[in-house]
Image (cartoon, rainbow, N blue to C red; front, side, top):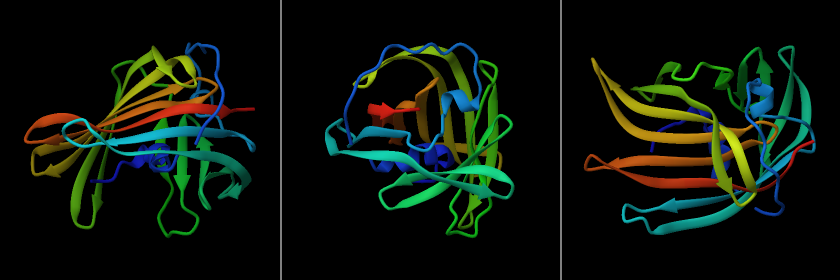
Length: 213
């Protein structure tokens, strides 16, 4: 399975735990800080399910993501976005949210951009281990109802399509729907993959509870 850069807003989510309920939150307008809030003491408990091609659940687990530290990184106020004992640094710059693994030699990477116009897409081409990939992120809705264990939210809906990039051909290998609620963050994600040109849900990540200051 290939990279999905925003998964740091989802890669973190390979680890996931549980707790409270919320009232619906409106998703009118807003900024990157609204849909992906970061303050020390914030935490999110998620349930992750992995499915096989028949729809059967292969992995069902929960885990906690938290913000438990902050520091200055290249002049930006950065936050420790922690899973288990490891963390990445996240920081805002204008309408972009960046991530960087402080233990790596990689450069910071944009994992989310907002606001955008409905139907607007952002395209990024990347080469990894000699293979070229294209990631296209499109804003589908600014306010879409999403029901989770943690509550019902009016969320911002993004569609991310990852494809192997061959000369003049983009071969889709993964599609991800992600939903971010203002004042809360990521509330739901669904990953779709392809087998024999048929799309199936390979992973879902659902918010169970959260504490956002």
